[in-house]
Amino acid sequence: MLGARGGWRALRRCPSSIVSSSSFSSSFSSFSSSSSLPREQRAPAARLRVRQALGAREAAGEVQVQGWVRSIRSQKEVLFLHINDGSSLESLQVVADPSMESRDLTFGSAVEVRGKLVKSPHKMQNMELKAESIRVVGPCDTLSFPLKAKERHPLEYVRQFPHLRCRSNALGALLRIRSEATAAIHSFFQDHGYVHIHTPIITSNDCEGAGELFQIETSNETQKSAEKNHFFNVPAFLTVSGQLHLEVMAGAFTHVFTFGPTFRAENSQSRRHLAEFYMVEAELSFTESLQDIMQVMEDLFKTATSTVFSRCPRDVELFHKYVAPAQKGRLEQMLKNKFVTISYNEAVEILKQASQTFAFKPEWGCDLQTEHEKYLVQHCGEVPVFVINYPYDLKPFYMRDNEDGPQRTVAAVDLLVPGIGELCGGSLREERLPFLQSRLQRYLDLRKFGSVPHGGFGMGFERYLQYILGVDNIKDVIPFPRFPHSCLL
Image (cartoon, rainbow, N blue to C red; front, side, top):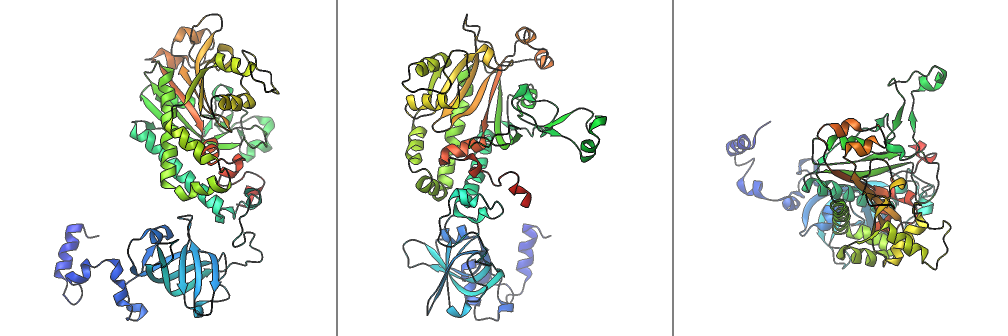
């Protein structure tokens, strides 16, 4: 392959009849000058995504756009198509001669359109494609296709078609938002000097009993379960958390994070639970302040949300207009203000004084239920709330003892958000070996050799998306529903 310098030398040696300086410097918008040539002699059409075509500022010569037909309207003198390739919520309008219409050119069909990108006379769109040719790549039977043109399908309806629901506006917007939110979270940590760690998905630990485990067995192990011969020589499970592995890495790197799938074998069909979901987890070394952990949690939430809003404004608007109309104002207000902080003691007192009757009576020493969490957020003005310093006996052994008298607490924090409840959970980790020795014999090696004060947190990615988009059912923010329907794929 020629390098850049060699390429320029080759161009200089070319005869002027083949490459001239004027023809070389012309942009792809000058391709229209070749339209008089036979098609086989024309310069190749510039391939554009729909998002690129809609965002173009100037007209262009021969271009090629590929996608799926979202609508088709035939008139006596003109044929209108709208095609979408998943790159944006908006579709590109194609204007064509009626002679290009065919039986296979229907809603849902895959097409390749060649033509000229021109300014659109309509106020609702910047550019449109004046078609010179339309090729149907894949026809679509509109009668059996479950998604219909010009219909706004409820999320409950499209959930029935996991292999096709990505073709709907709502799921297309959701998947673009997921992509941008994922990138925003990675960028936040990279911009703040964190090292990304790929923690194992298959593990032999249950990370302090964070949830019921999915055990892994080979098909042979299942058939010969009586023999108890494990593939890894020990029982293996799908991970419920990457925290333990991050704590190992926090002994060598001061700032680490992971972002990957986690699994909980809790047989719940509620709107809040998933068996498989993505978890954002981070560990910070050399920190003795719970406030440091809370600041990272708040900054991550606000930065990622602001980025999603700026990168996917139309996609977010779709959810805030049709799914959760009041969510936009709440989120804008949240981004402007500091999150509220209350102690567990204060939270229990607020709940005891509430006029509302709870299914679970609030008492000191009891865990906060979802109904309690939602009430606390409402009481504090429908803004995110940090609840800190939980009872010692309520939290896992590795959380740092506050040594605060009779009502013994640990340096733990949960972030509660409106409509959801707990979004993030974190703590300072107990780095003092004698304290751990009195509670548990695990993790001792991690505390014997160069142990430092540190802390971390975890955030469920799908629950984050559920909150910022105002979606009621968490199963509507994942690409594919779980069994039995996902077996189609």
